[in-house]
Length: 117
Image (cartoon, rainbow, N blue to C red):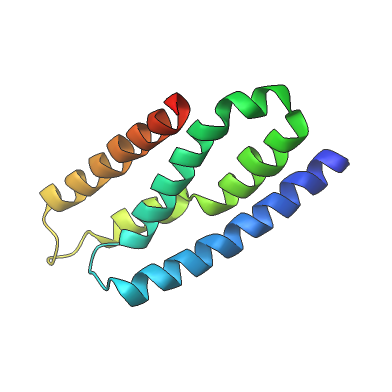
């Protein structure tokens, strides 16, 4: 029961932070590309790499922060939705492929950087 509450609390907080970061990013850097999703996924990837060693020894913190907060902050479903929305005459297939690769490569590098720090 307590594990579910930790995940729920962390996930709720992560989702609120994602919504705020998305609004902030869109207001500061308007773009036809979904830069906000890229930014929250990079931040989340970095933070999960940074906390990887810590969470192994603290399962409650792992449930709250890694599973809950970072699960609520980052978003694969929004990325998938945005990629489907790219299927318009405005974006060429190369744009879609490039953005997808960018998400995964930068996410991996951010996670690795967090891990080695």
